[in-house]
Image (cartoon, rainbow, N blue to C red; front, side, top):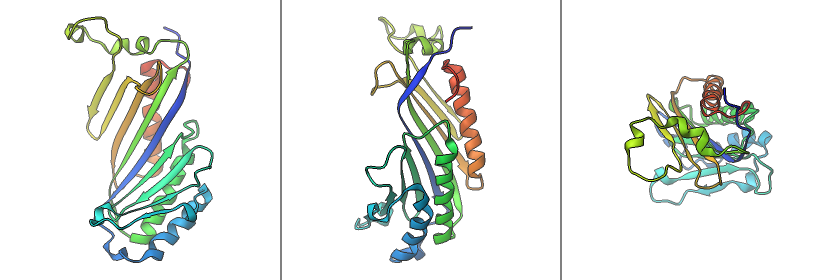
Length: 224
């Protein structure tokens, strides 16, 4: 078996989104009822009320958003929660993948506050993990050459300088391609959709299983 490739991750992002079964119309105009539960729930993660953004002047309610976030000078991972009347998105830049429970506990806290203010059931949940993974020694094309089938070799002409894969499954997809942002790096994006009843712990388990399998298939050393 070929040696596994040592790597580093120059940039990555995790996103978790909740879609509600209906808009929280009863909260329109109730500033304190919306904001206070989130300020309290997110304070342990270093969020600051003074850094909250209120974008509520758009003509259409679907474009209204309140963004709770940490101060700009906070060390990574940088976290923010964007709340709309019909959905909520948790974004974590530069997450610590070795300890996913940190970002997933943020999702739990945000979900608790969301239920407290609206009492609206979830219709669905989505996760998206995007990583730029940079092999330290091995050329990236050596890690993805196995994705090429004999049939694909018949396409176009000239020297092959890169290859990747896009796979769509029911309620899931994955992209593995050359990174456009970092030299000799691969861009990997895993996306999944869950029903509203799925727990954060169950979603965390799926995410860990997915990334573990990707590391095995691509041939990265160790675990994410």
